[in-house]
Image (cartoon, rainbow, N blue to C red; front, side, top):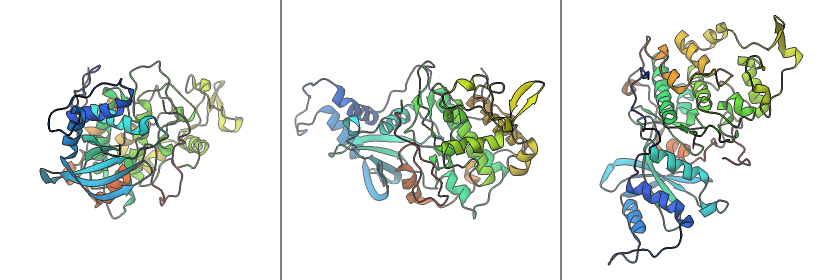
Length: 415
């Protein structure tokens, strides 16, 4: 098997899961408690009648001191915090709100986030330190402290200057995180700039696993109503229910393009508008260019005005030529443009995989990626971290300057 030229920790062995630490075991026990048959809880003298799970939970909760509130949304409240034993060891405490609309009062997004962050350990994925419950039955996630904002805020801050090598460094860290998820058969399904948080040392960390799911079973249908619209690939917009890692690779390509142009690459206000934005850059797909596309639920063939005939074969409107890419994306360079175009191929079967992304010549050709400690930094602060972490999967900030709706429609069931 070919190994990536980019240094990255080995994935967890397929078909196995790392044994979770006691706090995470407790969290999963909390989530499954109502589904377990009634038993007589064992307790020990002097514990006030608490069963073993409750004692473990209290031990975890007492390890952390909760500080100021950083942000609050309909889904969660985020606080600053630190370890009781070491006030310099900072954390973010994400308190998931009880919601009566869900079984046991816990949204599926929270269950997913706990499950997948418990399984994944990688320097470019946000770390889950612990999980505990409170007397009011809320679940609290103790997450890594990431105080330097996110990649979207970074490219929007025009007082921050950066160049080709800096983009390559940020893109490399994102690519390694996505590769690691896919090697462990996990789809993230909401990759975007404000889910890519920046640690104090400049490391980019993939966060918000509320829409993630396993994809080891290729015969099991999944919902197409995932991934924030600007970053949603065409197969999902067409209603595909069987897909793989290509959906994350498309989103990753859009994020890298936005870093290069410092604006949204494919903005739209509706799903139909999103397809139009994609057509303008990549052309209109047809059965000839994307075999099987006509079988997707929402596919509409191009009309005569947007098609041409070559050697008797009907083809869709062609996408933008290479000159367009060179003019608009000078900060990517020729290698970077080739990589991003491979990631943004319309037909997901022809799109680069996460492993192929890391094996691309872009990473090893000059210039080499900037070292993380030398990357441009900004003072996003704890407040921005709180705003990012409080959101439910698929949500964006309210009152955004761009004024364009990017929320998911949560009326559809997320399978």
